[in-house]
Length: 154
Image 1 (cartoon, rainbow, N blue to C red):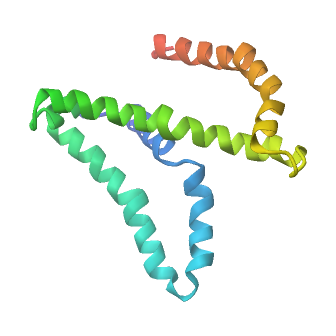
Image 2: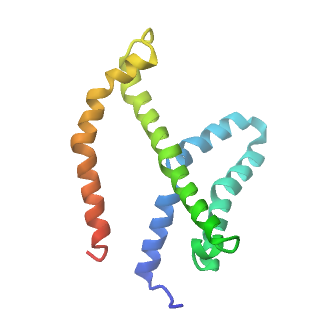
Image 3: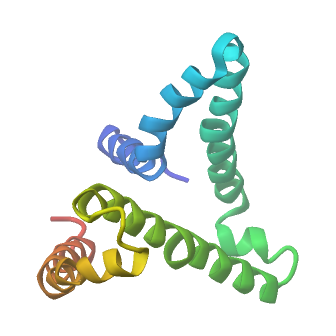
């Protein structure tokens, strides 16, 4: 295995930072600290172990195994395929996308809809925003992402 040059190390550093540092890592620790009261130190240790230690161990396990397929294929190739699909579904459509949608809804739509309306009325009020996003914003963002991924050396 070749050693990484400084530029490659910098790119890897920013890649891992962007993968693991989300809004939850910015908002959740102060909340945990405030709720912990006098047990701040054990709460901080628990958060660091679960939010920093376990993801790093996961990356190291996959790296030392030679890739996800090799790691999961130790059980069986069918298991590797099933686990890979389950992880991708969990990361995207099952958890991340609905969570992002509800956060956007709570921040942008819910404050402007009277609380006497039900959730269905509030969701219908959001339809023009969804159509705008699907018709213009999302294709533009995806186009830029595909362009960058297609030519990573530029």
